[in-house]
Image (tube, rainbow, N blue to C red; front, side, top):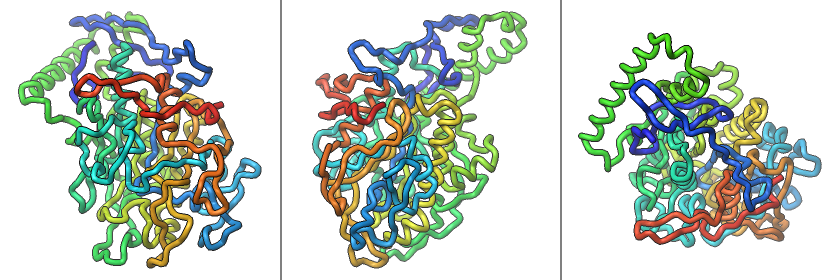
Length: 495
């Protein structure tokens, strides 16, 4: 298998998800194929196994309140607060009135209202890896040896290991909009979305975003002295995603290896010019043409170019960083991407950033957070469905934990951390449509039935992606670790 990569980046790009082929060997001017891969290896598994060919992870860092998203409590006004409940297009299902567009796509979604675990801290790493226990000290030690690999890194590792599919044209594991927590006043990058003991080769390929923020965001804290034009609240139409320098050259790539890669790229550029002039190419069969496109196109950068979409489509997603990130994720999946993560990250100030609404909860929910989520999520699901991609694309909206039923007395109101009961939204890729799983108490503070852990969500995602959740990966000492920790596949989420 030909590889020019140290971060999961490939030389060139692949074809649409439905049509991708695998490149086996490469000659000077001839190509051979190993044949098409079948991801639905259902031996010993149910019909949902392998239904998803790809996954989009949407991660609102800081943790949304379930009361103001998917588990409103209108019968308890002092718990529900300033935002009430509204009906959806699924009879009997209500969500927060701040999500009117999402209310119209709930027939595509399964909501898990009974999420629970014992760590009410910003455990990004706990939520997205099989890590069995957690301490807050781990959150800012991204390369600590105790960490387990990110779900996207595991997918990348296993697909490259088990399939002649390592170079389908797009990296298996892409992170948007930038390296998590790299755009704040806190220099410590958040742990979690890294490959840990699998090695930096399986880290996500990160992008950057060059669009400026247009609107001054509500304050995060009373003591905040600087105000920020947060691109998650609105950005310029000229904003674009580009490959991050942090992804283009990992620490373990030497100068000589980098020069070698550049030389190889130059050789392929020259070969492409010759091939374009060679009449024999027009006589190649479909498989040979497909293999050539894998080697000589630039689909990754093209897929990231949201400017190729009409402005009308971009407006539907929302001309803000999360909306444009979701649009880029759809483009990447359509181009053949396997696992794409879109983080709603902190910007400017880390303290109480993003969805961590200890203070000014309602101003931020009403003016910044809910409007951006409402447009992006509803449009993403509709767009995927209209293109025939939703049934084979798993879409996960999940965060670290939830927030307290009680509203505190801080300025603008606030909700503190709460992990004993919260919500996750799942759609596509074998997930049931229009379903509610689990139930919480009258105030939303405790799980009444069917508790689900973040590890169960990971296990179910792996299962739907055609990976047995009991699969193990070796740590640096060769010891096996189950990819989803102690999580188990939850068949009640699938349909």
